[in-house]
Length: 264
Image 1 (spheres, rainbow, N blue to C red):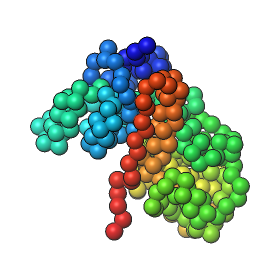
Image 2: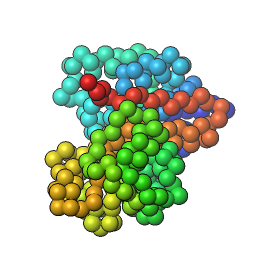
Image 3: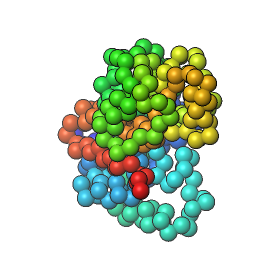
Image 4: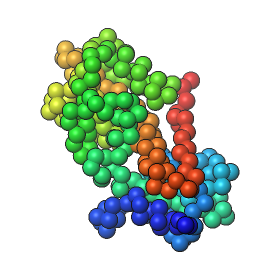
């Protein structure tokens, strides 16, 4: 039985999300197209698109917006040569591209959080699960031990942190993606009695400066910044596995990329 792009979309979206205002939609392609192969990725970069074409894929599912904005609006870059080249690559190869963002963040639990905790083998330590964050009680470790473990499991060269590497951590809060803003992240230290907060990204002048002040006041607090993609890629790999189970006869590829920033 042949499967269309719309069949795959229907299997992964929540009707109440699609019916409301959302960034999730078929950005390119015909929903009636028969699917030959699927790529699931954090962000459909030029490299991911080219790899997908090499693999014979004609349907790409991207968590983040592929034209450098959360809202699909190329108006400010419409004539940019980088945008035009990427657009031509998609259209000339008849690719369907679906944005899958809100549907997985608005699930209960958030599928991106589930994927990250599964990857870190921390599911059993989760004691509080809220819409935007989770709290874990992990076996006591130093901040350095947590950093080394997370680096190894997520396969990243470096992590940014604020805190004393010898400090012992047990009560850990986790926020994925761009949830490290001061308004969202800072209250958790007091509300949930956290030793350590781990998030994807947020303004540098907010939560990190709060943690610096807390340390200066003699409070045992710490912060680890994973990077937006590093906090969410495991969740997209988790989604790829779900799609594989639903469509076992279609090749489903999860394509990752190394961290965008390099260290000099």
